[in-house]
Image (tube, rainbow, N blue to C red; front, side, top):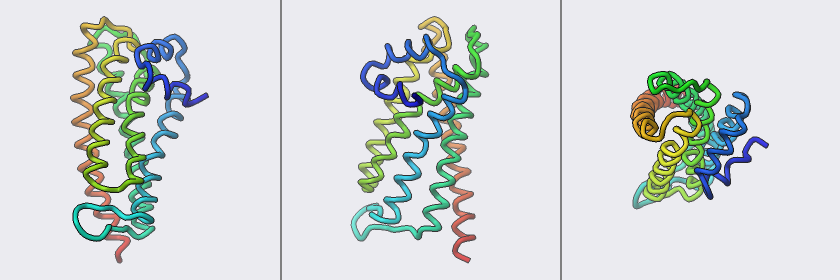
Length: 198
């Protein structure tokens, strides 16, 4: 089952990382996990922006037209998946520096499973009040970082002391990646919205 580790990562993350390490799945399984979980934010954003409306502050809710919301959702999905794959590559690339002999599949497992809480934050879009979504988003990011710090030494087979430094490097790369993706997404969406308004 593709999503079999989902509950364990919330209830007993350390034990679940050991289960993942004992029974590594294929690259395809980790990718499918990310692909399915990555659907949550764009689908939620599409429904909330076209049917419920976003409350940015005082005043009426803001709605998007369906073509704009669909473009936004499709772009969001591909950006999320590209982010998971890029983070997996960076994790794999840095692994040799820390003496790990792990393969790309293990790095993809780390990336896909630690991104899961961030993907789950997408459900907050069904209550589209900006400050609520931001607070829930921060909690999701914090839990993802926690999962990363716990899981990285286990999955990549490195000492716990080095695991903290390694995880800190991965978090730093993830933040740079996030800012790069956010900037490019804003530019591309601006171009897309201008095209749709013609």
